[in-house]
Length: 217
Image (tube, rainbow, N blue to C red; front, side):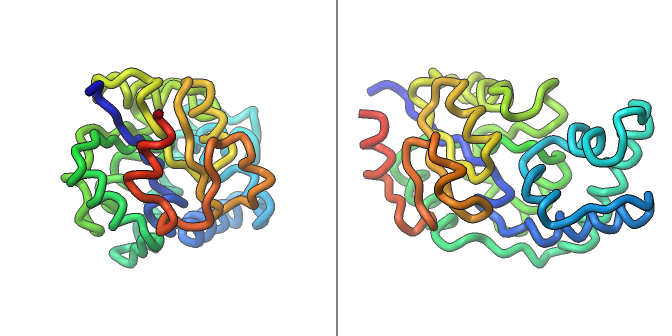
């Protein structure tokens, strides 16, 4: 049987981190004297920090300034979240079931490797993933498919044999551009906004190994 894989997004899919990211962005916005509303956050959630900063804090910022703001934001996020990471219902059970069934798995996120390590270690799920791809390993953020294609290459699985689990609109677009199947979880967006996905669920408790098998048939 050909290899098959699941490529997971992290924020909004495995871990309920959105409130902590929002608070960190608001602290940065207050420091810089610019507004950052909940609507701004929903619009940008899932994008890379560099893109969010350029869009919301000024496109005339130098690369060095953008990097400094991004590092500060992620430091604030990690201080806020600490070890208070809450997994979404069904995420851990699905990880265990897929692992037992022999599926290859990778984590591909727009966030930093420090955030990935904090959350996967806190939830004790790092060993489920054969590969992890962070913002450092890609030059283009979602909706570009690069992050998912890098993950598939690391797993040595053809893109057509990969299923992405996402919550963000740009993440779903990236998965489809990579020619991968995609499951959308409506944790951060309503069903109408993630309609491009192959399957839409409100929680991962509705997804089984059989569900994933059927998507690849």
